[in-house]
Image (cartoon, rainbow, N blue to C red; front, side, top):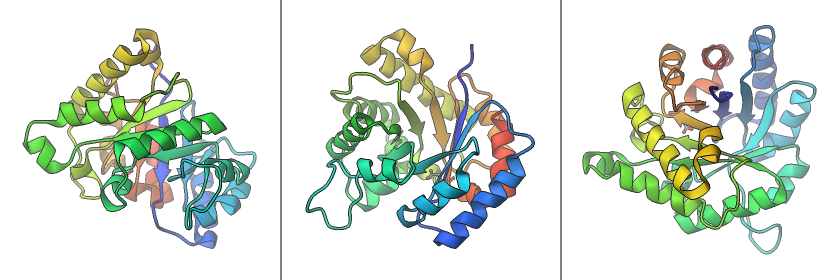
Length: 251
Ligand code: PGA
């Protein structure tokens, strides 16, 4: 049986609180009637989380944060913990996004600590992996992605509350999408790697999203691939009609 697709809008550092509330209303209006069995959520910035949680109440959408710290509290100026995210109404958190890794120096070890803490506190985790353009050109995509998966999951006992997102860095925000075959190849490798760590049954049940310039025009083809179980959507998630069209493609 095909896994239940999961689509999440990663709003990144966009939208004020009021703008976030407006976008949620527009998204709910757009997908309301045609809502199907797939799982859908949005990830606003930290300050918009509580307000967005209110706007999502009694809707089927989940609320995700875009990052969290690996401690619950303490002297970590500027950081937000998993415990705080739960209290603000989040059920999910995105960890290890390539922008965090590349622009904010997050290593595999830091990503792993965050995954561990978020799961321990009761959040569901969307763990992102993906190679850069140079790594793909250098023929080491498989090595990089396998390393990120193994390191990110180091010491994690179970993956029932985890979703992986394969996001080739060269495809993020660039308009260049991996072809469905390129994406499928890496998704299959990720599933194989997870199988080596947790067994075939757990790997079969794991959802693996694709992310990187997903649009209404390419979503259906990507989601039709056997190991692609929905998407992590950046730019297109800021437009309610486009996001709804992508959700419908995941139905
Ligand atoms: P994009 O971003 O859809 O704008 O390429 C995807 C992501 O970074 O999650």
